[in-house]
Amino acid sequence: MTHAKYRLKIPSRWLLAAGFALTLNLANADLPTGEDVLNRLGVPQSQLGDLEQGQTITWKYPENTDKELADGVAVYVPTALAKVIAYVKKGNFAGIDSTITASGTIPDNATVDAFKRFALSGKDAQSLLEVEAGSNFNLSADEIASFAALNSSLGSADKSTVAQAVSQRYREILLQRYQAYRQRGLAGIAAYTRGGSDQADPASELRTATEQGNLLIKTGFPELYQAWVNYPQALPADAVERFFWQNRVVEDHPTATLIHRLEQASDTGAVVIVRQYYVGHSYNSSQLVAGCLPYHDGAVIFFALRSSTDQVAGMGSGLKHSIGRDRMKAEMVKQLQRLRNTLK
Image (cartoon, rainbow, N blue to C red; front, side):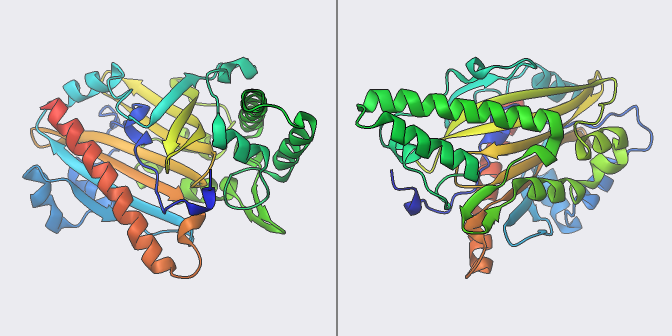
């Protein structure tokens, strides 16, 4: 496997795969109307007509770093909000992402067995066994050293033995990263070493994405927002958090992803914010706010995504950002259109 040949690829299909949606709690009188929210999201007034005609609209958010891509998309669904909420609560979004090859929940008392269905084989396993500091994989210096030690211990082992040993070592890394995040939140996320003193810092990226993120969460759900920013601070009493992992095909190769989902729900709505705090390769981190709110005779569903990747930084950054945003938006638009057709 030659990871250095990876094409620029921005994540977005994972959004629907985990059933991520946000709906406004209508019992909160302080929350703005649908029109006000769209204005706060940065949707130009000139696009509201397109929205009402059933078109999927897109807009760009200010990006905080040269590695960040930030975009929003929205679609109007001529369906009662209650029906949309019921659809979401049933978990009907799960499984839409065809790139997911395996996934599982991570329990509070997780052991390495929680990741037993994650596995690598062939060239993918061999590449990790021989991994060095760089941009091919997202690993800390200690994690890379652990693969070097494993390589020495395996000697001339056959491919099957290599695949089993590498998969087990990677499962241990996933468990360690999960445990560190649960204990310390963003402060527990180890940086990815790129060689020399060069590092990618997903903790810093996610902190910035959270603090500069969606205004609706900050103003409409301040307790949940504070818990999210300061995790593992205690959550609001009615909030629910979920942890899970996925093995997805990204740029034609399997990659492990660790995901934290936080939600509040009631009969009138729910709020869900989602963080990818570890990604195996290709991009560094990602954070999503998605939403469904009442609008005219139906509902507006929107996604607001911030993703960080080394691939859009450096020389030609402007062009890389443009290409990355276009691809990210195209995927989200397809997903929203598919969701809209399902809910008609």
